[in-house]
Image (cartoon, rainbow, N blue to C red; front, side):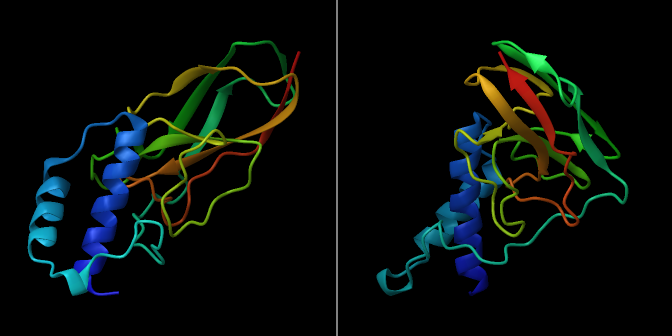
Length: 173
């Protein structure tokens, strides 16, 4: 992948994910995408945003952690479920803010960790907190659910090494 193709891919992916998270679009990414696309000929079209492989990852702080403050592992809860996240060793910032040793939360519900070299998906099982928040209320079907936190960088890509919580299990009444 050429540098130009990588830039276009990163710009497209970051703008799509930041938009999906409700974050603001960074001016630098807009300018880079406009400049790159203005210089493209039809034969050099950028690859689709779904093709990124081996995207660069932001460095994390050794020993950094994310964790659930509430609910506790094994808790029985009712809807709506109050969830509060904690972070140690890194700074919590909104999506699109490219700052060393920082990121924002992603709540994984009843799913495994995604590939670490690609942006974290945005769907019902991968809830983004691109606004930099550390709490939410969610509604889940009755039954047992597994929850996991994963910190993503300004482009929603997990850090190197990844910063994840322990998986907790809750039961919804």
